[in-house]
Length: 252
Image (tube, rainbow, N blue to C red; front, side, top):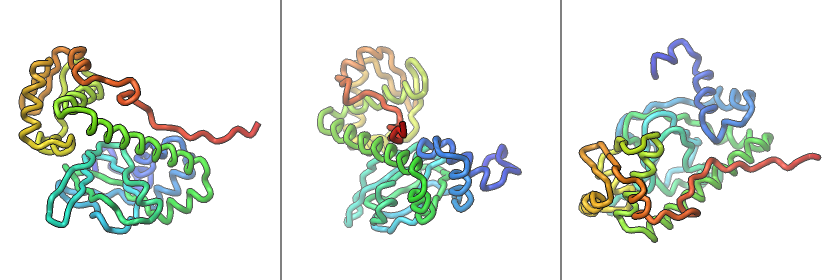
């Protein structure tokens, strides 16, 4: 834990972490305090497993620091990265809420900090807190729509177009006009984007013709508009969304 949290109570630290999470940003301090008092901030080392597919959920996991990969695997040992998570994000909520075994495994990509909220506590709050229930429904709707976009992206775009779209979103998320830093190694990114390392290298070579220069972990886009046209951006498919909000009905 960072020095800036020295002397701060664990409950206050957990409350601050929850307040930064879109899922809990709009709930009352009373609810945050009730959740934080019985939740645990846990550190995970690089490559440490948070849980494995087939295990029964006991907590809702909220990624506070670091990065976590969600993995699908086979009995033969083959793995595929389904998602790379960055803070702040609550993940695999559906499995947690219906108490069904995880369909994916979770592994820390780097040293990470995760808030573990006991499911019994969360489900108890949901029974008496309609505001929290509706906020959670909105978060699940956002994750569902993200999944649909990912499926359409895999089905409708080439490897080079998927990489170009990822690089564009990376540059925009860092607030830079042209440059960005790859947050993960290329092999991991290739897996996340549904490519082999060889097809990833070919995609980078192809994107050089459209104003993209990748050197090591640094990315530079010299012609953003050309790259957008190459991606064939779709107003519906690629529109950025804020977290969806489910509104309480009016009493008037």
